[in-house]
Length: 212
Image 1 (spheres, rainbow, N blue to C red):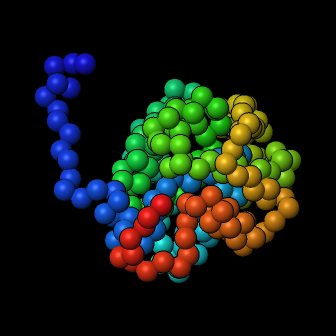
Image 2 (cartoon, rainbow, N blue to C red; image 1 turned 135 degrees about the vertical axis):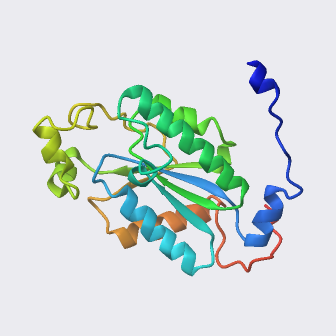
Protein backbone atom coordinates (compact mmCIF):
# COMPACT_ATOMS: atom_id res chain seq x y z
CA UNK A 1 0.00 0.00 0.00
CA UNK A 2 1.41 3.41 -0.99
CA UNK A 3 1.40 6.50 1.21
CA UNK A 4 -1.30 7.93 -1.05
CA UNK A 5 -3.49 4.86 -0.48
CA UNK A 6 -3.17 5.24 3.29
CA UNK A 7 -4.73 8.68 3.03
CA UNK A 8 -7.85 7.37 1.29
CA UNK A 9 -10.83 6.47 3.49
CA UNK A 10 -14.02 4.71 2.42
CA UNK A 11 -16.99 6.96 3.20
CA UNK A 12 -19.93 4.88 4.37
CA UNK A 13 -23.46 5.79 3.32
CA UNK A 14 -26.31 6.02 5.80
CA UNK A 15 -28.31 3.85 3.38
CA UNK A 16 -27.69 0.14 2.93
CA UNK A 17 -28.07 -1.90 -0.20
CA UNK A 18 -31.09 -3.52 1.46
CA UNK A 19 -32.65 -0.07 1.89
CA UNK A 20 -32.26 0.60 -1.81
CA UNK A 21 -33.55 -2.83 -2.82
CA UNK A 22 -36.59 -2.37 -0.61
CA UNK A 23 -37.24 1.03 -2.15
CA UNK A 24 -36.94 -0.41 -5.66
CA UNK A 25 -39.01 -3.47 -4.89
CA UNK A 26 -36.51 -5.97 -6.28
CA UNK A 27 -33.11 -7.50 -5.63
CA UNK A 28 -29.98 -6.13 -7.28
CA UNK A 29 -27.67 -8.43 -9.21
CA UNK A 30 -25.11 -8.43 -12.03
CA UNK A 31 -26.03 -10.45 -15.11
CA UNK A 32 -22.84 -11.03 -17.09
CA UNK A 33 -23.47 -11.85 -20.76
CA UNK A 34 -20.46 -13.44 -22.43
CA UNK A 35 -20.08 -14.75 -25.97
CA UNK A 36 -18.55 -14.12 -29.37
CA UNK A 37 -19.06 -10.90 -31.28
CA UNK A 38 -22.36 -11.23 -33.13
CA UNK A 39 -23.75 -13.87 -30.79
CA UNK A 40 -26.52 -11.54 -29.60
CA UNK A 41 -25.29 -10.41 -26.18
CA UNK A 42 -26.15 -6.74 -26.53
CA UNK A 43 -29.39 -7.38 -28.41
CA UNK A 44 -30.61 -9.64 -25.62
CA UNK A 45 -29.39 -7.30 -22.87
CA UNK A 46 -31.17 -4.26 -24.33
CA UNK A 47 -34.36 -6.23 -25.01
CA UNK A 48 -34.23 -7.52 -21.43
CA UNK A 49 -33.68 -3.99 -20.13
CA UNK A 50 -36.81 -2.82 -21.98
CA UNK A 51 -38.87 -5.69 -20.60
CA UNK A 52 -37.63 -5.09 -17.05
CA UNK A 53 -38.35 -1.36 -17.35
CA UNK A 54 -41.92 -2.14 -18.36
CA UNK A 55 -42.21 -4.34 -15.27
CA UNK A 56 -40.92 -1.59 -12.98
CA UNK A 57 -37.48 -3.14 -12.45
CA UNK A 58 -34.60 -0.68 -12.34
CA UNK A 59 -31.89 -2.01 -14.60
CA UNK A 60 -29.06 -0.70 -16.76
CA UNK A 61 -27.04 -2.12 -19.65
CA UNK A 62 -23.25 -1.85 -19.70
CA UNK A 63 -22.26 -2.61 -23.29
CA UNK A 64 -18.78 -3.54 -24.45
CA UNK A 65 -18.70 -0.98 -27.26
CA UNK A 66 -20.39 1.81 -25.33
CA UNK A 67 -17.94 1.85 -22.41
CA UNK A 68 -15.03 2.19 -24.84
CA UNK A 69 -16.45 5.54 -25.98
CA UNK A 70 -15.77 7.01 -22.54
CA UNK A 71 -14.71 5.15 -19.41
CA UNK A 72 -12.37 2.77 -21.23
CA UNK A 73 -11.50 4.78 -24.34
CA UNK A 74 -7.82 4.59 -23.37
CA UNK A 75 -7.72 0.78 -23.65
CA UNK A 76 -6.99 -1.44 -26.63
CA UNK A 77 -7.55 -5.14 -27.17
CA UNK A 78 -4.38 -6.76 -25.91
CA UNK A 79 -4.77 -9.35 -23.16
CA UNK A 80 -3.67 -6.80 -20.54
CA UNK A 81 -6.06 -4.13 -21.82
CA UNK A 82 -8.96 -6.57 -22.00
CA UNK A 83 -8.30 -7.54 -18.39
CA UNK A 84 -8.22 -3.91 -17.26
CA UNK A 85 -11.37 -3.22 -19.28
CA UNK A 86 -13.22 -5.93 -17.39
CA UNK A 87 -11.73 -4.99 -14.01
CA UNK A 88 -13.08 -1.46 -14.37
CA UNK A 89 -16.47 -2.72 -15.49
CA UNK A 90 -16.58 -5.14 -12.57
CA UNK A 91 -16.03 -2.22 -10.19
CA UNK A 92 -18.80 -0.25 -11.89
CA UNK A 93 -21.11 -3.26 -11.61
CA UNK A 94 -20.37 -3.49 -7.88
CA UNK A 95 -21.37 0.14 -7.41
CA UNK A 96 -24.56 -0.34 -9.40
CA UNK A 97 -25.49 -3.46 -7.43
CA UNK A 98 -24.94 -1.52 -4.21
CA UNK A 99 -27.23 1.16 -5.67
CA UNK A 100 -29.96 -1.47 -5.95
CA UNK A 101 -29.91 -1.96 -9.71
CA UNK A 102 -30.08 -5.06 -11.86
CA UNK A 103 -26.98 -4.63 -14.03
CA UNK A 104 -26.91 -6.20 -17.50
CA UNK A 105 -23.28 -6.40 -18.64
CA UNK A 106 -22.66 -7.46 -22.25
CA UNK A 107 -18.96 -8.14 -22.90
CA UNK A 108 -17.19 -10.71 -25.03
CA UNK A 109 -14.92 -11.34 -22.00
CA UNK A 110 -13.13 -14.18 -23.80
CA UNK A 111 -10.83 -15.44 -21.06
CA UNK A 112 -11.84 -17.71 -18.17
CA UNK A 113 -9.33 -16.00 -15.91
CA UNK A 114 -10.77 -12.54 -16.54
CA UNK A 115 -14.35 -13.68 -15.95
CA UNK A 116 -13.20 -15.36 -12.74
CA UNK A 117 -11.55 -12.11 -11.67
CA UNK A 118 -14.81 -10.20 -12.09
CA UNK A 119 -16.81 -12.97 -10.41
CA UNK A 120 -14.50 -12.80 -7.39
CA UNK A 121 -15.61 -9.22 -6.77
CA UNK A 122 -19.12 -10.38 -5.87
CA UNK A 123 -20.94 -12.61 -3.46
CA UNK A 124 -21.85 -15.83 -5.32
CA UNK A 125 -25.55 -14.99 -5.58
CA UNK A 126 -24.84 -11.50 -6.94
CA UNK A 127 -23.04 -12.57 -10.12
CA UNK A 128 -25.02 -14.48 -12.75
CA UNK A 129 -22.99 -15.53 -15.77
CA UNK A 130 -25.02 -16.03 -18.94
CA UNK A 131 -23.24 -17.69 -21.84
CA UNK A 132 -24.71 -16.51 -25.14
CA UNK A 133 -23.80 -19.48 -27.30
CA UNK A 134 -23.49 -19.16 -31.06
CA UNK A 135 -21.11 -20.90 -33.44
CA UNK A 136 -18.29 -18.89 -34.98
CA UNK A 137 -19.72 -19.78 -38.40
CA UNK A 138 -23.09 -18.24 -37.57
CA UNK A 139 -21.54 -15.19 -35.91
CA UNK A 140 -19.42 -14.63 -38.99
CA UNK A 141 -22.46 -15.07 -41.24
CA UNK A 142 -24.39 -12.45 -39.25
CA UNK A 143 -21.42 -10.07 -38.91
CA UNK A 144 -23.70 -7.12 -37.98
CA UNK A 145 -20.82 -4.65 -37.68
CA UNK A 146 -18.66 -5.99 -40.50
CA UNK A 147 -15.92 -6.83 -38.00
CA UNK A 148 -15.36 -10.41 -39.10
CA UNK A 149 -14.68 -9.29 -42.67
CA UNK A 150 -12.14 -6.78 -41.39
CA UNK A 151 -10.56 -9.37 -39.12
CA UNK A 152 -10.25 -11.84 -42.00
CA UNK A 153 -8.45 -9.14 -43.98
CA UNK A 154 -6.07 -8.61 -41.07
CA UNK A 155 -7.37 -5.12 -40.34
CA UNK A 156 -8.34 -5.92 -36.71
CA UNK A 157 -5.66 -7.57 -34.55
CA UNK A 158 -6.53 -9.72 -31.54
CA UNK A 159 -10.07 -10.35 -32.82
CA UNK A 160 -11.81 -13.00 -30.74
CA UNK A 161 -12.67 -16.13 -32.69
CA UNK A 162 -10.35 -15.27 -35.59
CA UNK A 163 -6.94 -14.20 -34.28
CA UNK A 164 -7.58 -14.50 -30.54
CA UNK A 165 -9.14 -17.35 -28.54
CA UNK A 166 -12.47 -17.54 -26.72
CA UNK A 167 -12.65 -19.74 -23.62
CA UNK A 168 -16.09 -21.34 -23.58
CA UNK A 169 -17.55 -21.05 -20.04
CA UNK A 170 -17.45 -24.41 -18.28
CA UNK A 171 -20.10 -23.74 -15.65
CA UNK A 172 -22.17 -20.66 -16.48
CA UNK A 173 -25.31 -19.90 -14.52
CA UNK A 174 -27.38 -20.09 -17.70
CA UNK A 175 -26.92 -20.75 -21.42
CA UNK A 176 -28.80 -19.04 -24.24
CA UNK A 177 -28.30 -20.57 -27.69
CA UNK A 178 -29.18 -17.84 -30.18
CA UNK A 179 -29.14 -20.26 -33.09
CA UNK A 180 -32.10 -21.98 -31.45
CA UNK A 181 -34.21 -19.08 -30.14
CA UNK A 182 -35.35 -15.55 -30.91
CA UNK A 183 -34.40 -12.49 -28.86
CA UNK A 184 -37.88 -12.45 -27.34
CA UNK A 185 -37.64 -16.12 -26.37
CA UNK A 186 -34.21 -15.51 -24.85
CA UNK A 187 -35.60 -12.69 -22.70
CA UNK A 188 -38.42 -14.86 -21.40
CA UNK A 189 -36.04 -17.76 -20.72
CA UNK A 190 -33.79 -15.46 -18.69
CA UNK A 191 -36.71 -14.02 -16.72
CA UNK A 192 -37.90 -17.53 -15.92
CA UNK A 193 -34.41 -18.56 -14.82
CA UNK A 194 -34.03 -15.50 -12.58
CA UNK A 195 -37.35 -16.25 -10.95
CA UNK A 196 -36.44 -19.90 -10.44
CA UNK A 197 -33.21 -19.06 -8.62
CA UNK A 198 -34.88 -16.36 -6.53
CA UNK A 199 -33.01 -13.46 -8.12
CA UNK A 200 -36.14 -11.73 -9.41
CA UNK A 201 -39.75 -11.53 -8.29
CA UNK A 202 -42.41 -10.05 -10.57
CA UNK A 203 -44.49 -8.10 -10.01
CA UNK A 204 -43.44 -6.36 -6.79
CA UNK A 205 -44.41 -2.82 -5.91
CA UNK A 206 -41.65 -0.34 -5.00
CA UNK A 207 -41.40 0.04 -1.25
CA UNK A 208 -42.14 -3.61 -0.52
CA UNK A 209 -39.82 -5.19 2.02
CA UNK A 210 -37.76 -8.05 0.57
CA UNK A 211 -37.41 -10.94 2.98
CA UNK A 212 -35.05 -13.17 0.98
